[in-house]
Length: 281
Image (cartoon, rainbow, N blue to C red):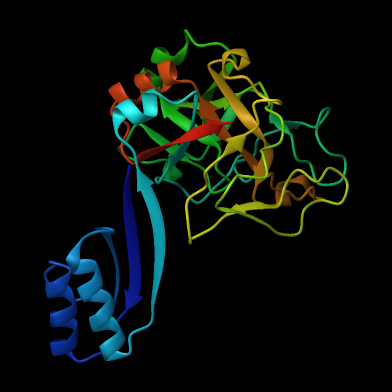
């Protein structure tokens, strides 16, 4: 495992000489921008040098820690949490989809499931790439990736259509049917904010300090009993069931998969796919 540190800062109204020195440490040319995000290996001497320079110039910055795992580390885990840094602005409700609320929370709507056909705004979907997330972390994969995933159990792959023309789109909405029990208290990188008072399943958020590292107790979860794909009990973000329905939004669970399914996604070369091992202890 390698630890990466992302540093973000702005240099608006800073003298060019200061900016040039900062970017030289980051090994980046001066592009004329006023805000930057760089990632470093945590052991890189350039990271310490950049922090020192930002401190000297009085530039405020933010840091986010992330972990990177080797293929063998990931495929040796009982389960893997999937994360993807490639998103779009819209979500299923905003795009005009209907949702089945029969098993959802009556207060906030957490647990709502889309009713086929799934509609997207074609203009908001990526022009390249093989997977993306909605703003509420609904998963979408390219048609050829969906074809590779059809052999796995407990996956729903809904075809998508343009919301205005009805034309079929080259994306499939991806979700797992099986829900896991609540995470163990040893889980790290998790915050809670304003959960629903009825279902208590939403209101979970990740942190910038450290990535989400999911832990399950062996008394509540056995890796061999989990299907190829599952989702967490916890839902990330905040759900809101509103009138009119178009103003609603539903928090989404994290997607967890077994090594065989992850291997298919890795071989499909999905860009910016960030997998994290899940611990069962």
